[in-house]
Image (tube, rainbow, N blue to C red; front, top):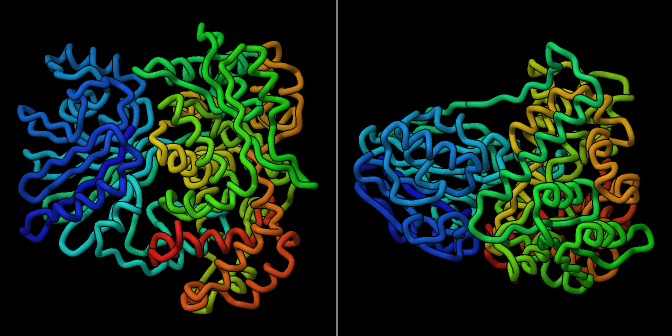
Length: 595
């Protein structure tokens, strides 16, 4: 796991090594173990390494293979690399390292652009092909690893986060009006290739991009998720067994490929609890587990310790309970926002940031339950959408959008007004072929798009800020493909995640299985009052915010005067949304907010 960056010139000049150094410096927290730089002709690569597989210097990057005329920078983990390595040796390749990085490089030489179709894992990488004089960029199917790029003054630059691209300089920081619309209607999701900054773009999940030496771009999507029933139907019991085996294999794969200890982020929900149970099934004894809790509010508890404690006791884990007072949450909010490659509204972002800090004192790698709700139908809004009437867009919009278009127009200044970009986008995505039912359409959209730019991005940013690699077995693509074929009723039954609950019966305490659906709670960012409201008021009435002129002041004042009255359909604080974006812009664009 690492941070990567690079520059390819199209104007005949040498790469800007000072800009590359600034990018590498901005990535230092993603890779504290080693820094590498390589350049030749029109191209330069930088990399910060988090050593997890093959801890020797032989696996340092940028990795150069002179014989093959290829150079690679790679972020991620390829779980099936031992099998691929063996296959490549059979083709006559020899290896000078023991990890997955060199396997990526030689797989590209053997199979070209289609090498990505053979990888099982999470990855973002760049390869300079000296013979073909082209740059090859790729991102994993589920978008677990980020990869941003920008065309700047006669060159293309890429990096693992936007902070690095901004540090390199020359970025136009005007806001993208379409992205802004998505941001405020889709819970801070801005689907690829856009970002909130008009000049910064990102490689989409399951996409490769080949950049020729003259700057010509060619993009290719190499995987699509089908949500269709198999030709031969399966019973509920058969589906339970198939899913159980697919998840067991994913957990084992995510555990086995590491030369350092692997822990688990144990929330107390069924997802992370199942990971602990399946590790026990695999013979792991006393795994490290970590749970975090916050102060309660009258409306909501701030921890799920009563459930995580039961799981830790049953499996005799080496358990770490972490309690964060509200004062620390507030003091460190700007620090967490500084680690966001894009603005995030999820109230648990700061939770993951503070949890990852503690985890980093014990392990470099953790498994996390992200993705289970989207893959197996766990959220409360799915049954509401299914029961609703109207078009697919109306059923989705009325139970998910943070703001309808009319409210959006009252939120932002007239300069950012335009058509209903989000409705148009969602309608197109829902209508894509190869989904049997409306719920299949919704879950496929969630898994391939919304999940990527909300919880998955959040976990990557917040854990990598502390040099911790978060692995997400529920997003192992064979498991995702298997789950997409499951009939929708066996996802929504039992209050959601029906098959997972069947699987868990007998493995986990009944209290964990039968409990109401919980979320990673940070109540102070949902029920905004007291010092948190004061903080957000200061952000939204600051000189920077007023001069930016992004928001309509009447809307801001309405939210500030009664923040707890204005929650989104999925229970997010609307005033926090506004404050979060403004704080992100002050930190990353203005460079004038205190950290």
